Length: 404
Image (cartoon, rainbow, N blue to C red; front, side, top):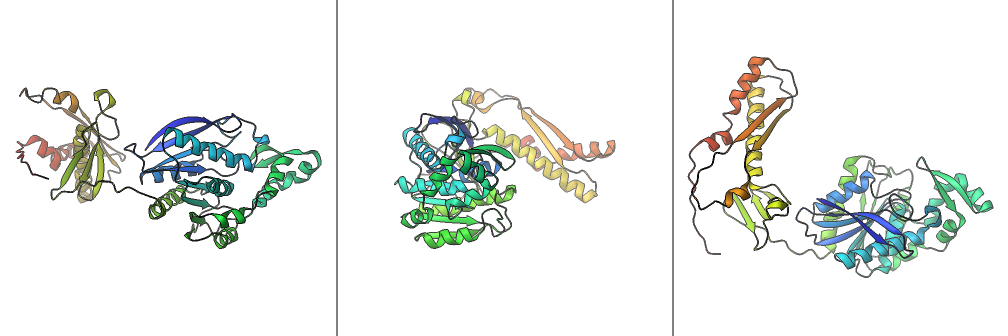
């Protein structure tokens, strides 16, 4: 996953700050907009975790701060629900201009309500997911209860929300009164996924039931059993991102990615430009690349990085296997490896036939205290790692050609 900070203007001329996250190969098949919860921001860990899980499934994700929150310009006290919807539309416009229109919007809590309204105004959005979203906009007034009387009397009040003070004006409440969330969701002709926790004590699960009843098919519901409203547990937010990504594959246009096929153990596939190489090793998909200074894009480890990784992994496995057999409490074994030269420089002289000495520096650490004799023996055992032996042995590489 790569993370790029971006800025764009909303309809009021305020500069809004966000992060655009792309999958490892920088080629998202679809873009998703994320709307954070009321008074939250783009940097909340659950927003980042959901984004990360989605990029692992090939999506590009734009998460940003609404007006007056986080790093975005504007006065929060002058913002309202309609402004949040307009911010989402501005974000969609940014994606359309610079990349590609978003095909999906995800909204958490109050942000889910904004996502519903925005998706109704964005024909290019084909799917929508809400997380812990209220079925009525007046639900947010419960969070403002301590200041409602003063707002109605003086037109504004400082209200504590989530441990932070926010100035709320009467226009915010008046704006909510003009919006019918269930009517809008009933009119959507889009695929919708509603996620909600039965244990949500801020927005009760009955809200999910009401949204589901109001929505048209295709609609889906997933229970976030055990999660709280803010998805405070890391595993909950990652799970949300994973299931949304999987669900979206059913309702969005996902181009079929070319998968390397082989009857061999490993295959490497490289297109005509660049060095970003797609690998299939057993059942696993990997990416290799070269650093930018050597003409690559740095989207993955270099071939020599993989070679060093093979030595490091094999060494740690071999040492743990030996220690378990000996019943030595070594704790966590870490093998740190450096290689003295880079693949790209080698290839400049591939045809010269000049032998070069490869040097692997290997440092091993254990988290448990061991006797000196035990450490010395384990260092000896490291040399018996199968990859270590392969690197020392004379290797025979047989190359042939096969017509596609």
